[in-house]
Image (cartoon, rainbow, N blue to C red; front, top):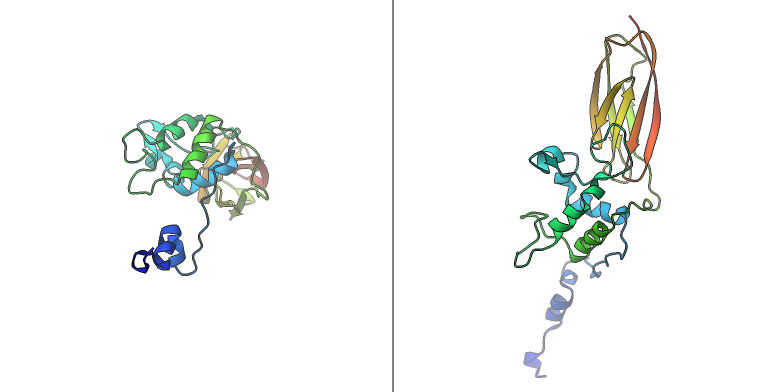
Length: 230
């Protein structure tokens, strides 16, 4: 090949691995979609690509009419905190929304101007949607955490304190606080101002408990005793 028609080294680098032209960048191949993905494979994709609309704010940012499309596993911090079901119930819809229609320029989800899913991300979601199993949590998975600030030992007419829900692994944790017949829902990680009316409670001790879920397991915590005085 004449020298004048040979591609330069710079052109070869650009064609084979554009990221090499960026200082410090590597050229790693895209990961393969697992043949039998579990929630541990799917959850990071949904959290990174979908749950800014279909997570804790789904009632306003991820709904169509009265139907709320929430794609984390624990859902809306249901009163019973049952085993994760919501995302699995929506698996057929997830598959439909990320699969391109014939002749369409892109799948329905995620909508423009967001970037389309990578092929391996879409294939992972589609394969999981065909058999939406929970599976084991990721290796080293840690339970969600709840920090309570300003929790009073004695109360009169109201119980007020701050509850801070977090997950050390960055998962879409949710939880509920329970005392007597009252339930306070925490539908996302973050800080919550708890304010409960206790005027109808009989005097004496009452226990506050919490149930937290990170998508794989439920953890129950005894947050201590409060005493109603009159």
